Image (cartoon, rainbow, N blue to C red; front, side, top):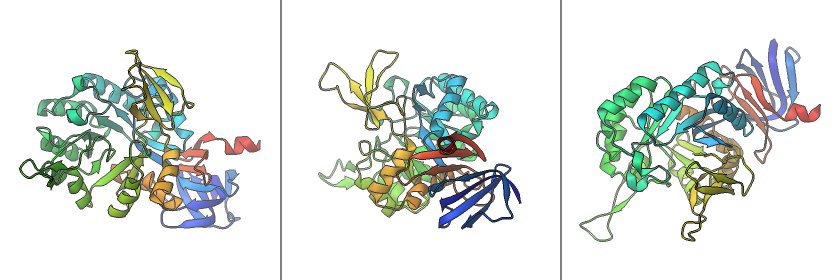
Length: 409
């Protein structure tokens, strides 16, 4: 067999098993053989890469990220988006879903169209699965970092206009299911194959169930801006079931956690691993501008407020001691989120990788083409060590980040 690329002498995290010493053969963008031991003599390839005992893993998928370094998907230019994609590759990401923040609808439409253009025309466009709209259809009390002036209910005419303009690039939409017209929104998203996602919500059990019946299938950063239970107003100290009860009870609904112990207390990682089906657990970065920058880097926004990077999060700089140091967002990279997940959930690396590869691919409906190392799927692969440091990232058979062979030469 003539191939384009062979990776060998590595621990292969294949879809259904771990091969302690194996190889992966790639031809025409696709995985064509996965095996154990040395590469067979009947295979010749344009490039043979000895990964020196490192881990050959499916590429990582970030289904919720707002930006990296100095690039914000809500305001980025075409060139900045392309540069951001190259940055993600350094951390093992082969596919991602660029995410926009609450803004005027026309601004959001503009950015989704621009991301569509990058997907269609850039050599790095294959990394983009689609786009994610997070806001403005969110609950004000749970808005987190979203500006309250942009929040609104999902009016049918606005929903229809938005989906007409960008429905073909849209992969997912986060919304609060307690808002008026949420069932209509859920139905319209489901009809177009867009994943309806709960988030920034204090929905009742009944509100959540109504949207699940209409097609909602995922929860944005559970335990961060999601209020799961309420006290019964008629019975002191009696708790009422809320959105959390609905999504934990329904095995059709997947749950994502931010890979950061500040946004998500450590026990929740082990809890979700225990209570949700194996293919319904996802870790994301929810990363913002500043991600990938050195510790204590200071960033100044257009409105003048400042933040600094510290241990994978962004914190406020302010003269008011009540505000200074407050959490403002995530700055974690996906390989570090993976490393933390393995530790917090107390699971093997191969299982943790599913949270950032096959499971997000399944949630987004692209698991037939990517998300695992399996013959017939695109060769979206990353090579890492046991510490989740990244050496090689391959998208559709093309290396787009490589410190492994460069180090040897």
